[in-house]
Image (cartoon, rainbow, N blue to C red; front, side, top):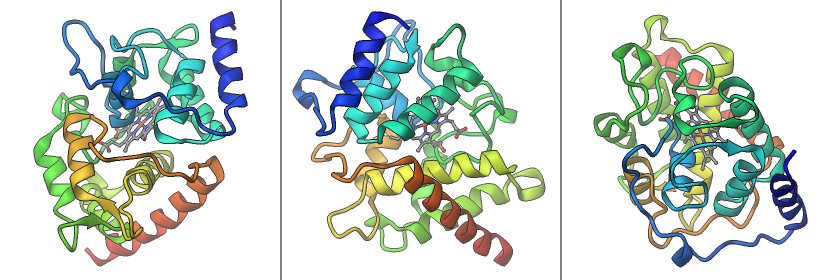
Length: 240
Ligand code: HEM
């Protein structure tokens, strides 16, 4: 491991209390030229704000872990787990470019919340129609509750041939819904704010007025919540 990478990991390990870089130091700038982006709104947002290299190239484990912790308060165990998986499945020699993550059926899967399926020829670009369709499942037009996300996921999966994701894709999709819900929760805790989600999903930008949750999103919590979420999605699937 390079010295820079090691010191960044040590920084994260020592950062029991989070050190969040001021947002003013990290303006939102859309990608341009040869900048690379992924099918992941989380990673793209971090690159668009410069918490990851803005060109989206040559990202290593330490950069990925540090940014996830610093920006979204993902616990180091969870951030390390996702980054390690991404590097192992889509990277080369311990680094990846964000568009390497487009590879279908590595981490990228069908029935996404913001993108079309790979079979359409574009699993990479934000698809506003799909985003609006997903967010239309909000029952009050203000937040997306667990239940709203579960109905939205069941609807996305219903359009699949056979109506099913395999278990690993189902688990990934559930974790992605958990992130969307927990990281953009409204003050009452009822659900994720629609205005925040609209900005995040469509512009891959940190919404004005948004702050990361105080409670870390740990690996164990994500696993538990994803399992509960999958069971909820299944109750809606069987009703269709
Ligand atoms: C190194 C860390 C990460 C890697 C390698 C990664 C990778 C990916 C990939 C490949 C997808 C595409 C799945 C699909 O086909 O829908 C994805 C989707 C997603 N990711 Fe990440 N991700 C990372 C971190 C994050 C973080 C920190 C967040 C939350 C802030 C996040 C939130 C999401 C969400 C919500 C989706 C679903 C998008 C959709 O369904 O259209 N990810 N991620």
